Amino acid sequence: MSKLAALFFLPFIITKIPPEQFGIYDSFLVVFTVFSSVLSLGLDSGTANYLANHSKNAGLLKTFYSFTIYVFIANMLLLSLVLVLLFKYEVSLIKISSQKFYLLLWIFVFFQYFNYLTFNFLRWTGRANVSAVINSVISLLSYIFGALFISIYQENAFNLILGLILGNVLGFLIYSFFAFQYLTLRISKRYVPLLRKVIVQSLPFGPMSLTKTGSIAIERTIVSNFLSSELYGYYSILSRIGRMPLFLYNSFGSAVHPYLFKGFGSIETRELSKRIYNGLIISAVFIFALMCIYEAEILSIFRVSELPNELRGLLSVLFIGQFVLVLRSLFSNGFLISGRTIYQLLLLFVGLLGLLIFGDLIISKFNVSGFIIFFTYLGVFISAISIYWSEYLGKSGINKHILTLMFVLIILAHCLR
View 1 (cartoon, one colour):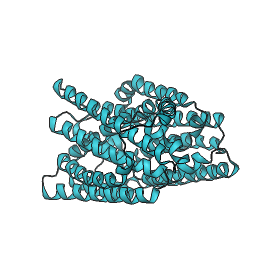
View 2: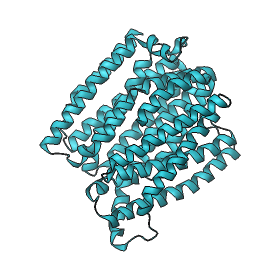
View 3: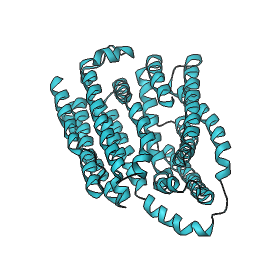
View 4: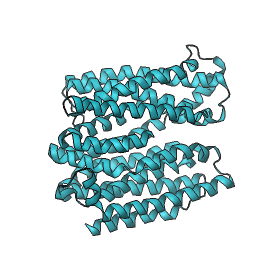
């Protein structure tokens, strides 16, 4: 429901606010994902295994949840200092540079990420129904308030974000009611050795998450520096529309990931993994074909009738670039099971380095269309290696060879242009 709310809300804001303002809104969300990726130092991912397998141990749950929240609060204080320094030295974060947007960013990060941490905690401890209902209510309220604010007041990104924040504040109050029982000021000494072990295992997840979100931020920075504000706004719109089918994959992934993780290596889970993997690939091929053939019709739904020539024919490519990230996230459990998460970090760093080294060169020589093709190729390549490597470390039973089809699809899309 929360993903569907976002799905129906996106067409409304695309038709309601100008492309330049949508570019600011999109930049705000990208910067948010970068900051939120480092707030918990990977503890949200590193504790998942223990939460799932010790969901009846109240003392352990209190220890993990409280420690995660205290780390989050400490990092929010550090983020305050970072934003003050960025404003003082007039550093622009893509399209975010004013004091009011920096303040909005801090508030949005605080409430949104607290809600995420609590949602994640409830989900991994077997209360997916409760967390799903709360998350749906928060999303619906956020988008309703956002729509009201840009309908009643000025149609700009600032009022839109204010509405989203109000919904998350209400969500914070709801989640606090459920989470209060798990907060404790005292960490039991008996759990300290285990907590240290979890911290060590979690540390690679922070940089890994940062490299994933950082690649999107670097992509947006390169494009925003090359394009005008209006053209960047259209690029942001196209990118968001290309991501829309992912709400199905992300929702499905959130539901099945705990099962794939807990049963990793068993015959039943290997068969399940194979079926899910092949099913996702087949569905992606279908969506890719629809976007290739009916791009103009799809964009017309969002009242985007005059897409700039530089961006035409790229909707399907942008979709594939995001889809392979879902595959990589869902089918790389071999790294975690084998305790080799550092390999994932190394692989992601290589991809980020490739983007930093060649990104500006590609966009200056081949325009934004060439850059999108390059960015997508890079994402598919890193995802392919990640899944192959994960299978080598711990076999889950997926048919990894079918991933090569993604390369064929991108080449086909490029030819169709």
